[in-house]
Image (cartoon, rainbow, N blue to C red; front, top):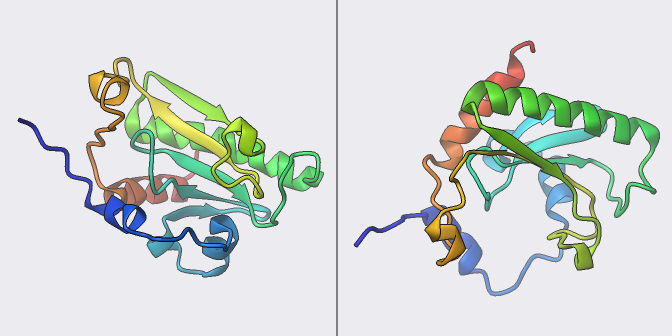
Length: 162
């Protein structure tokens, strides 16, 4: 029998009550980027690792401002968010050489937003065959490296010119 170890999930599964604070607002204001896995800070948005990724390299792009819809977002926020999505694509391809990428947003709880009050974009690398029996049957994802390793690779890539 194979075992899949994911010790970083213990904090999540053992928490009795979800935090009332917005994860994007609290993490971006703490100025502890390495601890919070923030790989890049722009003027209006920041890029961080998803703590519970679908695949290795799963990034989240979020504005500093707590807004729930693109309609509420200022033009500078939206424009920078798209530039950061482009940078995420470049860096994910550079670091992980995926066969494809998913880029997208879930606006509102009914659309699947995990943080419905604060818009954010997902950028994640995909490989042929990455949805295998573990994901399909067991609802389990196997990630080949720790978040610390992923953070180090992507932080270094974002720090280098395109």
